[in-house]
Amino acid sequence: LDLPQYNTWLFPSDDHDANWQAFKDDLQAPFPAVFISCPSAKDPRWPERHKGKAAVLVLAPAFYSPFKQWANQPPRHRDQQYQELKAALTERLLAVLYAQLPHTKGRVTYTELGTPLSNNTYLGATRGEVYGIPQTPDRFSQPWLRPSTPIKGLYLSGQDVMCNGVAGAAIGGVLCAVAVHPRSAPAALSLL
Image (cartoon, rainbow, N blue to C red; front, side, top):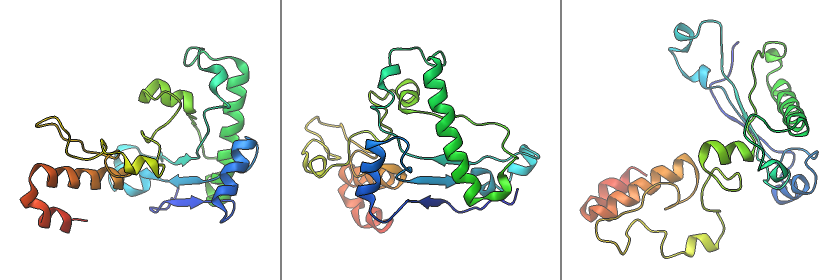
């Protein structure tokens, strides 16, 4: 399919606060951000393992509130209104994909859309979150979010020690290694 090996981030405007607020106020507003990645294009062995197939990931954020009315319905058995909302969101995300990669139109054979409720089911979230502790200024001043803890031998690592995402988890790991073995600080910090 000649898919790109790079990731694409799309925003409706440079005013990110306004983008998020518009989407929070109206689920039909443009997505405040869309991320497109083609994992199959990054894997040199993909063509031999999955001949004639490709994988594309199209992500957009979602607030919990538009979905919470279905929280008590069982996963994969939620009512028609929920299914229709998922189908509409899927079509909107596909439209973004086709605008960026027009040659994929008519070639998509399978889609699966997750919502904040999917995150609750499969990630153990409580309100659809995927990144753990909210990334607010107050969060970074919490004394309990440090690699060292008051419990001897217990250290914290991962994204909640630093900041969310893969990079935050990696940096959290380095900070934890330094907390466990302070002499490793120069070598560990050189990895950053």
